[in-house]
Amino acid sequence: MRFRRSGAALAAAGVLALAACGSSSDGSSTDASSDGGTAASGEVVELTLETGFTGGDRSAYEGLVQTFNDTHPDIQVTMDVQPWDSIAQTLPAAWGTGQAPDVATPNFDPNVAAEYVQNGSVLPLDSYVGSGADQIDADSLAPAAIKVFTVDDALYAIPANVATLQLYYNKDLFEAAGIAEPPTTADDFRADAVALTDAANGIYGLALADHETIQMWPVLQWMDGGDIVGDDNCAAIDSDASVATLTQWANLVIDDGISPVGLTGAEADSLFAAGKAAMEINGPWAAGSYTEAGVNFGVASIPVGSAGPVTLASTVPMMIANGTEHPDEAAAFLAWWTSADAQRQFALASGFPPVRTDMADDPELAANEVVQSFAAALPSARLYLPGVPNATQVDSDVYVPLIGEITRGADVATKAAAAAEAINALTGCTN
Image (tube, rainbow, N blue to C red; front, side, top):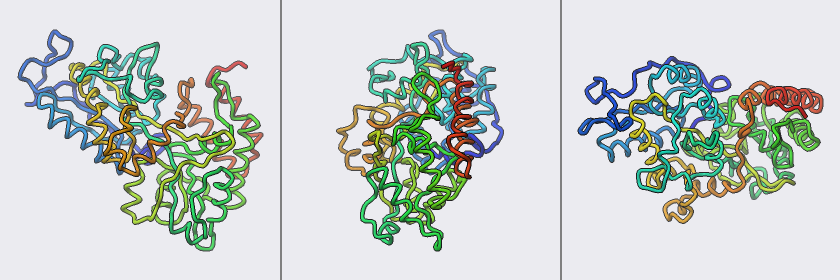
């Protein structure tokens, strides 16, 4: 799931060719039957799934779709992969006018799901929820994902995946610096980032991206009690803890050169893959590309600060168009996607933990080191700005620019105070 390969706040462009939903296997249109969308007996229902999974884990998603098609001859799914930004630009209009796709992952930001719910373009899933073989077993899915995908007590999406961020470290660079183990505390993390930086040889202690990336700076804040927005939807970015930890990390970038300034996610990935960064906070999707690059790496837990164990969780919503001609078949696809068999296949192929919470004792998954490393972080993982009003604007218009400014020398307290005002205006906080 290459969240990091987006071209602006979401990704580079491209124009989708929009086709009408529900064509039959011979290309002619099909009519929904009177039972709410099930095709007439004997017909093959064709569904389109639009996703932004363009990265190294793309084949794992494609493998799931292929397995579904092989085991469901009456329902065939075509996976249309587009850049995230292209989806963001075209999907609202497509769904608003009843066009394709039948199923989509609209964004890598789970908070975007609520926007599609508000404009009435997605199908509520409650009638498909249950414990039966062909039902969506919501009780067995990651609770944080189900919470963010539930609006006014109705479920509108399932998690296409669930991931956590962990600490990748280059074993060879650690050995060269005389450091035996990855850091386990926030203090050691900062000290190691400095010790591993070798400016003369172009080696950085940490590849720390600040834009066009899944966010890692919030993890640095959370470790020592900082935050961006509080539970009351009021800004916490200007709290003493937030200012203190942001100041620490900004100074490490400016004064100690632990990371280049202004890295995109893709640039940070490339730095680590080239053996030019000793550490990087990243998700399971990166493991395959680093292996292919020949990096001798390990995966460790995020170091623990004064606030206790914490990391960032991410999940991508998978939603059904309200205008699909085949809601039952689309729901069957979502139910299968979140089944134990499908999640086992996906986890083993991608390194992601399964989206289900009832697979901890699965012997195949227990034997997979990468899956276990990221699954172990789930109990301490937090979603980024879940349920915060205008969360995407809080991120793109306030938080990302803030990090860019303070890592270039701006006064942290001053910029954090201005950011707090902007956040409160976006969230509606009046405190």
